[in-house]
Image 1 (tube, rainbow, N blue to C red):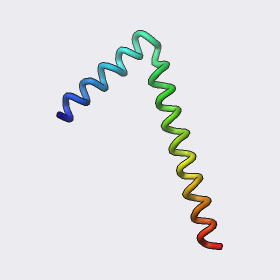
Image 2 (image 1 turned 90 degrees about the vertical axis):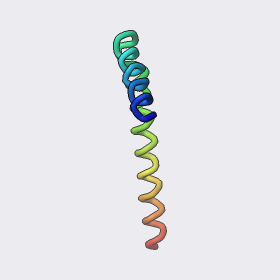
Image 3 (image 1 turned 135 degrees about the horizontal axis):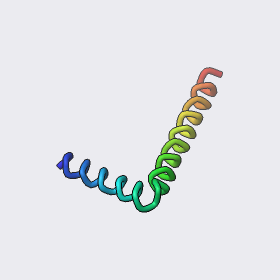
Length: 52
């Protein structure tokens, strides 16, 4: 099952790279990075409030 999912992901990313020059993959990656950054910032603020 995992191999099938991995093959599908590789095909989708490859298609995006060839047809759209990686635009959708780049946008998705940037969204993940922003989401992770905001989560880290929120956890950092929560930790600072807990110490006070």
